[in-house]
Length: 346
View 1 (spheres, rainbow, N blue to C red):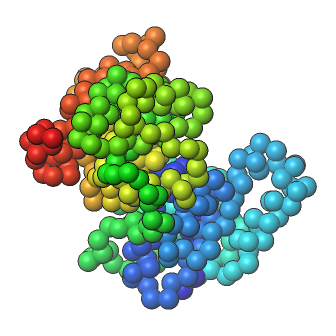
View 2: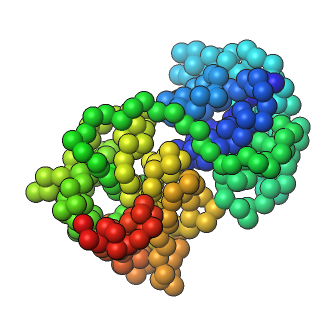
View 3: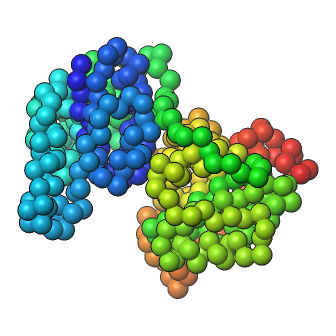
């Protein structure tokens, strides 16, 4: 059976599709599965061994400069790649007009969420078959059910597994944690003093800490976290294919609500997620070793990019600042060792 999956973005949404790909590969012998995705996420999709071919879709360039994309041949190349196979099934796992538009170029019966449950209901008009999967479960579960319905297999006995395979982690001086501090909203950030408190605690336990940073603001925050802490190391800029092995080799990952946190969880690394303004119930971390800490404030989750309680605070809103470094240390120990006392003695 030949199948085309369309899931263009974002990082977290792509990661939440991997368990469904694993299901399909296990349920259908000889499955040939291709995936259309925004070009930025091609290295990520290639981490799944059951994806035969990845079709890059330069969606941002097509939207920003459509005429230039046409003249350069990029648009034609995408169309040719989509039409180079006749698929038995095309699955739009995104449910947006942009993903539906990509699907129109592919040969094959199109499946997706029905009008009532797609993120953009009009997208369902392009499908040959829409499936009713309400937003009452985690997105990864809904996508697993979508694949099963579209491809005709049962999920009974299939354990959720992202199925990713990374390169070996780079050599490190010893065990390490990864702190994922970067995110798109200021209201999703944790305070630098709390990150430093946790990093110092890790240092006393002879644990290194690795920080990633993308852009000037994240670089400045990473520098502030690492200042005068010899166990904290700032990783050089790298693509997703290089970041994944570092995450996979970590003893634990502490993350705010950001895409790389989803990747860490999918890789099976013990991952602690900090949530204040956003709700992780439907789109949170999905993996075998995750613990999500949610603010208990009445205003959370507010889904706002500016905190109404502290509108002048650009980072570390009160709902997340309530969590201390000691809180996170104990949470990691509970997740990894089953006992907060075990690491309190370190």
